[in-house]
Image (tube, rainbow, N blue to C red; front, side, top):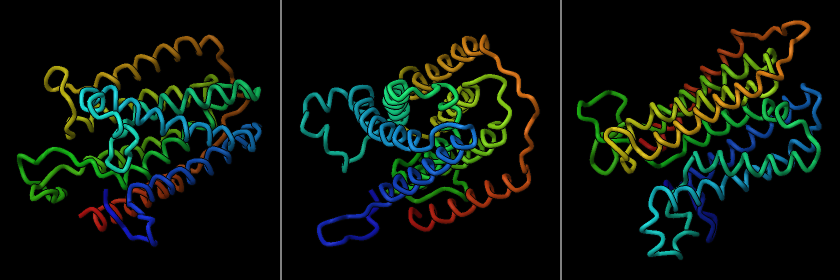
Length: 273
């Protein structure tokens, strides 16, 4: 991990800092959107904290038991050594979703309206956090101007590919959020589109291959897409009709998205380059 600075015995890493910033930004957006939808902002905030813990545990456990089970079964103590890396975004989404479902069901929140409120903020959090990710892509067979030097090789900036696409997904969800056709549609679109993004970026990454050129991550993304399609079919039965379509400020939202992309790319290449 990229060490930024130390305060006494406390080390501040780039990835950890970006996860913290992304989490704060995502929770802010989620609470803001929840209040717009008439949901309890305080309960949404508490649910986000549950989701953070569940997401962290899920991300680590899926990496351990899906991506490298042999190593960790032989070295069980290293399962808790997060400082050495090893998190799965698919596990994070699953763990966070399970923790959030548990909390929101217990607190009496409308599950799918809440999921719709959370989806844009979740996407924004993932985009910002990915800026600090230290898992680089494959070595470039043909040198490209946006390649990044890593261990003496010019590699694909897989993190940048993903956060750029994540920002565009955030823009789409933010535009769509005011006019869903049914409760849960925004979250379903998040699941499907993010899984497609992760599948595309995976071709530039290095992960255990199931059958060439498809990796473990491709299989997990396919499961996410299938889950999203099944949910869409089920939730469409509870279709809702909005009284009047709410307008979005297209150009303002697009401008903010482009600003996020440009600033994130500048920060990424400044720190990781």
